[in-house]
Length: 422
Image (tube, rainbow, N blue to C red; front, side, top):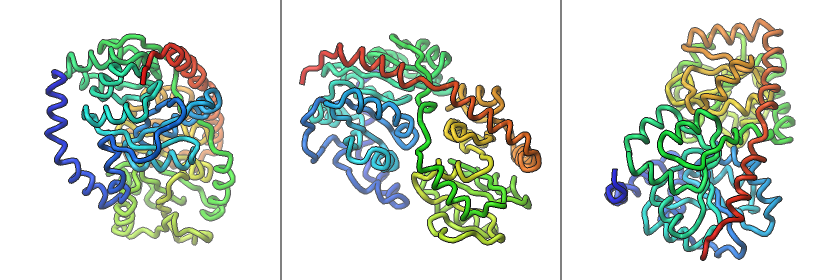
């Protein structure tokens, strides 16, 4: 695909963008706000300090970047940290984690006029893109402006690599416009190189360096008191569409409390409707203020920013996005909390971490509802198995840290060699 055709397709799609935002805003009203920023129009004062810009699409990338942002703030106190997001939940997570110590805005759509406005307004000294954010006009215009761009915590599944390969020269040119790529694993690095990338190194996964908030253990203990300390608690975390019905089938008739936390907040009501249709006794977390009655079978986790507290409150967990082909969600967070982990077979977004967790005894992979039910029963009935997985999870997470230090060394090299001219 030639660059002009890529840009032409974006312009053709532009008139439909307001319709998409209006539609998404029906379930998540935040999509109705900050439209101007998505076109590169910003009303806040221009930064008075040199800008270090980091793009984190949504919640997962923002949380993964937390140790890096903390280190950047400490080592570069005379710079302004600018975070850009694509989703409202990413924007909200930034506010929860960093408050007003960083500047948080939306990244504009990848249209030349919008990208130019963004770069001219903030004039970043260095740009950092998290995971797999490859926007080709952004890459090209950043290079023209002399802004070094780094792709950090980079991952590229085999499936995504095949899709990018179909873009031919467009992906090759885009990757060549990156100053460096810091890959999560050797397999990720090899796939980037096969697509034509240069200056690729392996720095590890930043998510292993994310420390659970101190408050999450205390909040988790309070939550467990509300759940009922005597009853086993099974957490289905970051579930995706279609998985909740399968999970309910797996736990049917078991003597435990099931806590379901959907990945996307706009689905909270959909899952509530599913629970009602199944005639299950359930309580929303947002209304939970006193200990649950024994008759309550399910808690719907309809709160934001409490996932670590949910992990602290449970006995074992299933990490969603993996029972159906969504690629899996972050299993590193429950590992850092020492929780036994169950995952489905669809984990290409976390392929290396999932394989290592399974090999270390921290996680068990299931292929279907029947296997999920059997493993839940095993963990309910076998306390020694649960204890060994607890120890394995902690050891697995501790052995995998160190990505932040390696990434910071790469940032330092490119920041000091930056030739950006406002």
